[in-house]
Figure 1 (cartoon, rainbow, N blue to C red):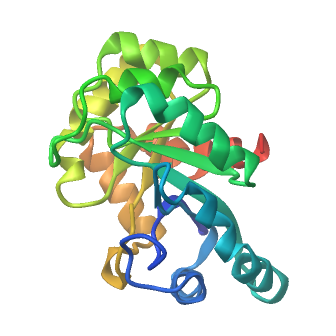
Figure 2: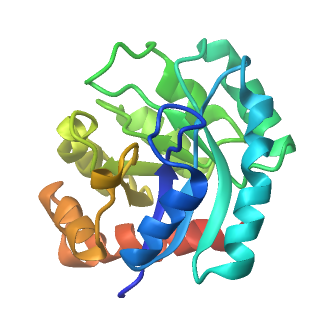
Length: 218
């Protein structure tokens, strides 16, 4: 367990600071095996995700890191989440994340439920005070729940971990990287998992086994 996997990252194609190649290079330098670029989308820009596919293909052909095209459906009406996620999938997104009901932003009530009910969503990011019922639906539909390393979104990590432990959800530790300093090593990711209240075994699953499980089903 010495390679990092992070499936929630942003570039300057939404509100991140780096080009895809810059992000990938910095991640590779921190011993990342795989990253997913999941820029924020709604109906206004979801079709733009294909703009970075050439850069991703170039990176994957020449560097020792695997970059996946993804998207994060963000602050859209709950009624539109599944449709926007489906469009992203049709356009080639391998990983679709939904911006969950984080406690650090005015999220739309019902976002978590709409996300876990969708067949087009892979990860519910920073789901705030997710309910046990929502977690059970996520488990049924194979949707992973995120433990976030990002300041603000991580306020509810302990609650998310507790609910996931009760229900049996697969957890992932992601950074939600927007700037260079947001990237973390695998050792730091483990601390995030342990700090959320996961056991040593659960932490390893969240930072290594579960990300691989998700990638293997793509």
